[in-house]
Length: 98
Image (cartoon, rainbow, N blue to C red; front, side):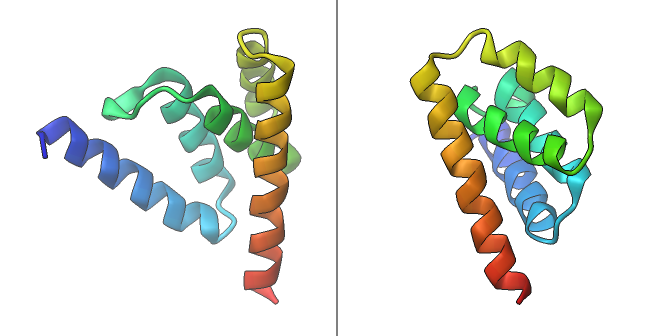
């Protein structure tokens, strides 16, 4: 595994652990990583929209702006997939917290 792949894997794994604990900054960081390809992460606008949506729900206004920016580059089908993924994350999180 190349260094950039290891860096990307570490970034995503650490942010996912924090996101699983409800860390809003982790939601936003994941949105940035997936929307920009930061640290060698593959760009995935559906994942980015999902994470920006979760951060937005938690009140992060910058995430709302970022979500709107990438939505302009997405199809309606992609946005629906991202929203579905965000709802699924919320359901899993709610069960884990119970």
